[in-house]
View (cartoon, rainbow, N blue to C red):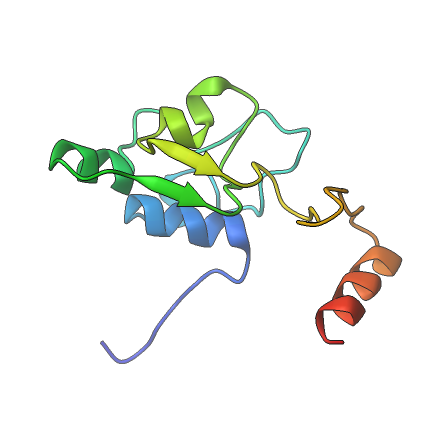
Length: 116
């Protein structure tokens, strides 16, 4: 392999890691799953933790899921993980649990705090 290709957004990249498929094949090619969207990785696609469970592994997820949360079938504990500790969507603060609005001021504040 001479080149490496990855989507610069979290939902498409996470989806590719969990499925082994390019985002175009999972419906995640257009960007991140927003808080108010009714979409996620289709349930007919088997995810990595589901394969690992079949082999007898315990599966636990820690951190941001961001692969769908509008239906229980999209949640990590319904997609092969035994447990999940973290957030379902993005742009959330781990300490205050607040959700950042996606606008220029919020992004600047987020980046400023990140690089302090």
